[in-house]
Image (cartoon, rainbow, N blue to C red):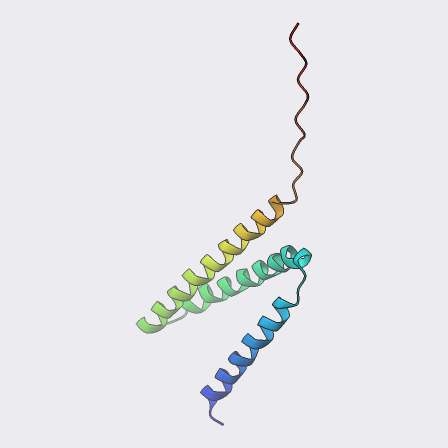
Length: 102
């Protein structure tokens, strides 16, 4: 089997496994799962920056810059979603009863 076919097969299988794993997660675990995913995306972003810094071809540089932009958008979006989910659990203060004016 040729090398690209092996990588494509691994990618397709990982997509199916990822969909199955994520769909089975209960809603109470989505916030911790997003936090873990944000940490992984940070590592991916750092890797993209390191690899792009060592590339010597223009094509590699363009692909690396696209990877950096997409990883940044993905990571920032994950933090925004996590923050919005955590805001759902913040208790709002109850309004104080007003005393009647005398």
